[in-house]
Amino acid sequence: MPTAPLAGPLFDYWRAGAADSNAFVTHDPATGEPLDTYRNATSQEVATAVEKAASAFSTWGRTTPAERATLLLTLADRLEAAGEDFARTESADVGKPLALAREEIAYDADVLRFMAGACRISHAGAAGEYVEGSTSMTRRDPLGVVGLITPWNYPLMEAMWKVAPALAAGNTVVLKPSELTPLSTILFAQLAQEVLPDGVLNLVLGDGATGAALVEHPAVRLVSLTGDVATGKKVAAAAASTLKRVHLELGGKAPALVFADAPLDAVAAELAATGFLNAGQDCTAPCRVIVEDAAYGAFVEAYCKAVADLRCGDPEDESSHFGPVISRRQLERVEGFVGRARSTGASVLTGGRRVDRPGWFYEATVITDVRQDDEIIQREVFGPVVTIQRAGSDDEMLAMANSVDYGLAASVWTSDVNRSLRLTRDLAFGTVWLNQHLVLANEMPFGGFGQSGYGKELSAHAIDEYSQVKHVMLKAAG
Ligand code: NAD
Figure 1 (spheres, helix red, strand yellow):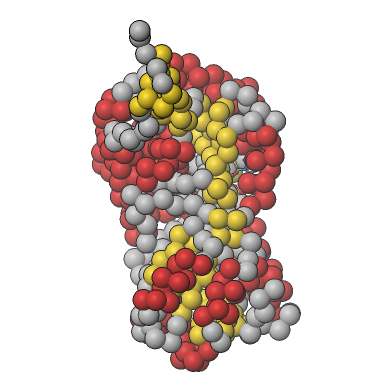
Figure 2 (cartoon, rainbow, N blue to C red):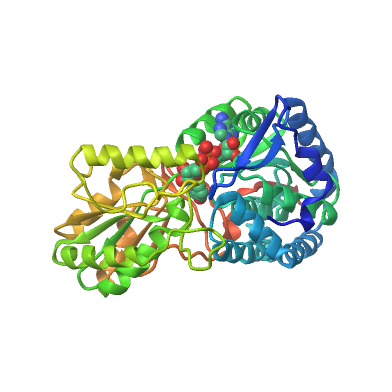
């Protein structure tokens, strides 16, 4: 665990003794041992955070894009400078390999930098005389106070995806990280306190009740949630009573469509590496591989071989490809899915059990002989479990890919350009990759279709998400 940046007012403020009746404890997924004890925010603390954000908005909302950009760039530099501490914190809290955590922190700094630049590029709005004697123009205004609620799988990255565009667009923020992994967000908020004016970024800790208090607060103009579909539905329903805007990044069940004309060994290696990244706890992980009949046998063999080379081990071990899952509950959830798949006739080709050691480790698991309406195909496992299905034609593969409720991401692996174009058009997913999977560009939008939610993160679309369009009309003199 890091030592240097932890001592700080925010960390001290949110820490609690185990005897505190309002406390919650985080655990080290690699050992199962307690890590730290924090306090749930009271609803009064949530209200105070919203009031502070509302008060700060009166000045922050009027800063120029250049002023905001300068501060976001400073934040990016400070985050990068403390990168190793952040990476170690994230690795310990989530149980993810240190190398992956390091990549994420470097990427997080770039999200801040992109949004710093993006808010300075004006959108060419309609300006002109649309009614005789009047001149019209449009402007984009910030919303005010926004509530940002993040999950545990990429704690700081998810926070940056929301915080950076929200601040860049001129909003003030109340941020609530997951109760399972709050530490990197606390450290970031501490850092932000030294860079941003008071009240611009506020932190509240706690579980769903704290999140719900934030969603219900009438002064919050927009809530952005990344989380489970069920949580998204609750948030959307609660937000309706105050008619606040809602942005939802929810679950996924990403298909990878593999055709016989693709280089099967290379594709198998790439899909195995991405399918088990972050122990499969990635909403875009290719967890549903669909293979053209002619290539099925060869692909399954190559895929299982590639999976056998992936090391599940300690987060600090440089040779680990993936670590434990986040919690005992998640481990039991994964076991439940695999057990039910087995009992309904699926074949477990590799894995399918806990790793015999302390902590919440589960073996990389590959499942075949499943039907399209099986639970293991239709519901998100969010663990190191991948299914492989076979199909006879492009149309059948497309139909299998699309017939789930989720619509976050998909990939197509083929050397046929026409097939690629047809499938990118017809796949009902917010991101479609061709001959790759999981690669992100901060300049490009990210978000789901269907039950994977609505709204876009990243790119200039995210700035739009956190602002509202106003029409200004002037009567011409004389
Ligand atoms: P979760 O829905 O349990 O929790 C997400 C956040 O919502 C947490 O901070 C939690 O405290 C809060 N929350 C819970 N109930 C709430 C309520 N009633 N009101 C307000 N806030 C509430 O999800 P999780 O288990 O932390 O994360 C895993 C889920 O997130 C998976 O389904 C995964 O697919 C999804 N996810 C989606 C994306 C994406 O970009 N689409 C990215 C990462 C994770």
